[in-house]
Length: 281
Image 1: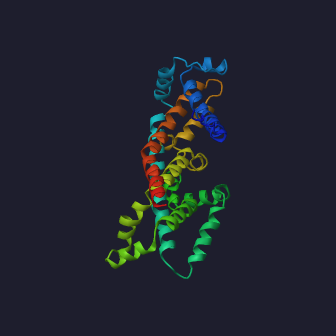
Image 2: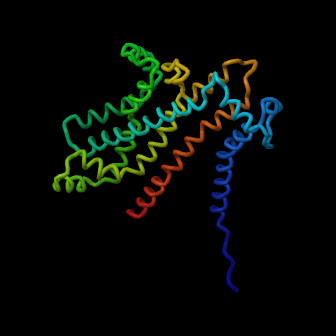
Image 3: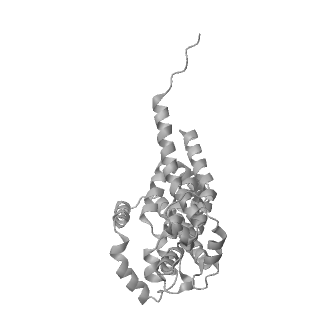
């Protein structure tokens, strides 16, 4: 008789741990959707796994609230977050390529300076930044939320590390010999190689900008320019005695839909990058 296959204990433990982690990750998402289907009175009774029948009522309540422009806030967040993701990934990639592909005297100093900015908290420079944009006439506008995304030390460092592992300088030299100018080389040769890194950072930048509350709360005052996090906070604190928790959960549920869509659109590039990396190795 053939011997029975032995059970791999490590494999079983690994699968159990992964199942538990998956459950913890999805648990709060499922509870959010369930709460969005319940009324304020049902939510006051406590936690429940049973969905309610007020999903459409909560959605209509938020959509028809004249003092709460939900869909306008989602459009505002999409414009700001999308612009930040595009500008941040492109210019960070361009900066990383410049420091990686060129040799000049201040190369190490420039790299050190960018890394020094990386450790500086946003809150430290908030008041100076607010005074600067006020003097420049950009208060209560989207420009201060979008333009600074061009300079992102964290994304730059990620792109620089990716170039070190994925872009041979001989490829750049070959393009120069063939007569390609620097911007053409970057846009048509380097960027396609960096697609997986750009996709990852585009997701992180989009989500970070989408969830950002601190900076927009300092700058934006007009309701028609507010982003989703500010509107959610406004809905929660507008009338403490009459606020509707079902409406708040519905707004949060709707607010995470664009993030999921962006991830689904860009995840194929991440998977492709991992596959190509495995083939190269």
